[in-house]
Image (cartoon, rainbow, N blue to C red; front, side, top):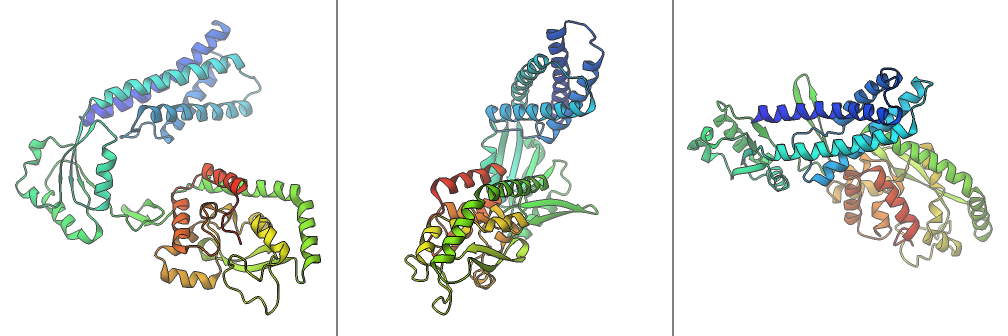
Length: 429
């Protein structure tokens, strides 16, 4: 069965490569008949094929479990085809002075994308005919999630699910025609896991261990040290390329934004200066990514002096000035933080930074509080657009922050920015 799956997998890879090159040739013939086939177009067709093969592999189009439904698999293939095509166009532009026919490029992209999707549908049906039978042992969180996820795949069959290792004493595993034995125990049941592994020491059936990563509130990563597997808990599942993109967007958008709104900033600064005593700007030491402290800037919206004793700002707070009520309600007081974004202390989107004294207090009271400092602090964030700011529930705010870190994507950042502009940050006093 495993040999059949590997054979189908390699066959699909080869056919995908052939589809890419054949589509390129057909598109050429459609545009130019047979004139000069083995010239520039034939050579760069090889480049396109190599690029496509690399992108398809990195897009995980050939993963063992694939996708739970055909629409997701088709979309993934279309996205990978688009990425490889764009990369090829960029490379060809810098590598050659000759330009490909636009008609030919359009024909190629439509033809190859359609044939590759049809190929995925065909091979999906072939893979579905190969049943993958597994035995699950354990009642840990990972085992339960594994069982739930298996329900999305028609060719994966759970032969049995045992709570502990005792049934292994009398079970005839060889006659069960298993493809994998899955062990999923929580950390506190390590003895039961060790017992099962001891009883399975002479079994030829592959054994898969589901590690207990229940402590990983925002994700985990796998590594290896001299052959020893390592699991890093509470490491955000964010690629370095994603963080670089986030930083580039922060810097570019902030710089452009500051140039555009600079007249408005000067006007606001003048109004603050002439309507109340004190400085224009207000700064506080906050804790950012990896626990590093930085000075965060705001437009001053409160009175200065002994009448201001600090603490949380509440609704109808007497310390807030008349102009302060307006700029706080509209979040204008946060605009100087764009300077923090420009300097790299903050991001446009992320968990709100807190003062060090409150951090020390909350880390003792709220489990997982410090994990929010795994990500760069933001001017706005998921918690803020959902109303968890100011004098509101801290646990709810942290819950939103951890959800944001665990599910981060560039698209999510853009969505939060739009939500901030559309409905503002709720509970701003």
